[in-house]
Image (tube, rainbow, N blue to C red; front, side, top):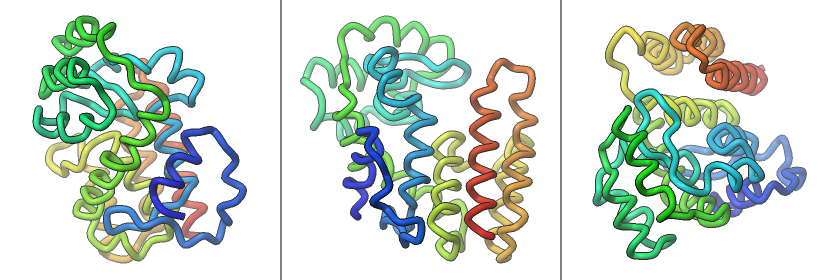
Length: 232
């Protein structure tokens, strides 16, 4: 199945039973991602369709260093004005697009204010979120992940998707003390030692323990478990 078809099946909340566990994956950004892996990203970024439609169909601020966020985890704080206009013109009115482009690069507490300011002026439906995720966001993050972890193309599709989930959530930077596990994962993948990766995914939970970010702790556990199962 093609990228768009897989992502829209996931976003629609339909059964993924038609995608065999032995599926070679879907080609995205030079990688092959499993349907289960795409589902993991979408569920972690949206909480599922019901929650999305209740709480996330309008711009919000997730907290911390995030920017104004909408769609499937699309963070305006980490995108340029030109990028937002390119990615969201097909799914928004000119007025909505202007509001979204206006929060480009804004992060942290200021983004909290900006999210409140534009919230009532923008609505992104579940279907629109899925289409933009499939057409713009997922391919870009897949390409970023491939560059961050050389040699990952040799991993099974579930494992490749886990690394995309990491980069989707944390970005691709390898610099600084907070990124030591990312560097260790990069080195393990490059050395052909994927069995070392799950422990590093779990180890990075040190960054969020006791900070009221239990969702991130659960996400790392889900990613590590999926990666382990993929390489057995």
